[in-house]
Length: 433
Image (cartoon, rainbow, N blue to C red; front, side):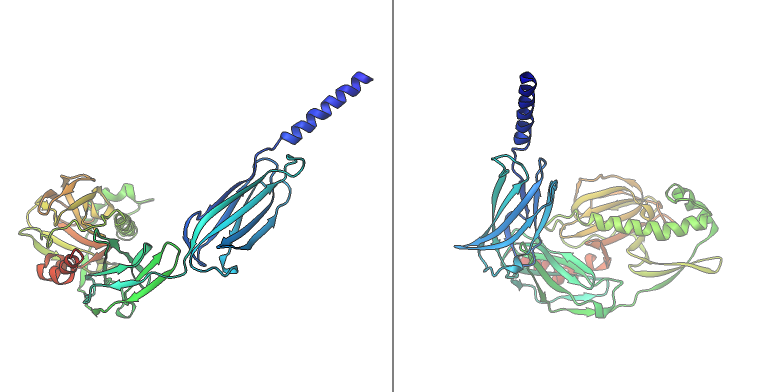
């Protein structure tokens, strides 16, 4: 009997020891954001984790100067191993200055004679409710529908989102070596004049945002209407190139419509994605080169209505210039920059996309041969390949597009040295004075 009791006592001590020492680790505490400037607009999220016996309670307070203010307190049910606790600074009367968030958390462990494990952590932050101050530098901003423009300005603090905004469009600004911000944007070809009301917006690291209006003049423009007849010979020529890219492809006409609508949209989205890979400084040098000795076959923003056997089947907008000379002509880079894309892209066929910095990019489409690859640095006038009729082209030519942050813009402006000097170059020159 004594031996049996001894075994029970030893077993009880073992079990008690196991339970007592089962969880000796305190809860883990993290805060997002954990440092830097915040405001009453900042979404502060406290994250707690205890993989042992689980969380018991948490207390949060804020200390500014010698003033300690309770911010949050929460008890947890047994077994709760993780929790997110939103923190609302609007409950407190903080002034714009440094402050500290102090978090104390306990778990359900019986360690420390039943008191459990505790952890305390402090986070140093800065309270900032003052939005950035925007100082406009450029004065004149003249736009024609589909055209480009540039605004330059200064900010008094670091910003996490800054650029030009109107309607549902946003064009990011980039900080130059001088510290001045420059933003290329456009009066979009597809926007009503009353919706084009550009303003500079800046949001600082704490989430405070300020807008600033700019002086501008906007001139509307009517684009050409064009009738495009789709022939059976064109459909039979192009269908094989796209059948593998069209799900459940049917007749050549159905294939064409899918490409002209769905794949066109996919390609446009890809060009917007590529616009994020832009240099934060100008890479171009002077006006863009026009393809030498090439005749113009189509203009920017031609509104095309497609007909098949006399029946209207589709409508699209042509977003570039079509230029043609001889078959498989040498294609030159319009200006200096970095190659982002050099391969097949849907309606554009074999094509090249070159980044010229500040969101400005050029597209060379329907090519038969590519002589550059992504990552290459090219110079103005350098040969990048040869023209062709790949993609949705009816004959050998170059489709040249200019884009600002992924939005197609009027090509001829960037060929014009006078327009470039008045609207872009002179403003950039003043940023380095």
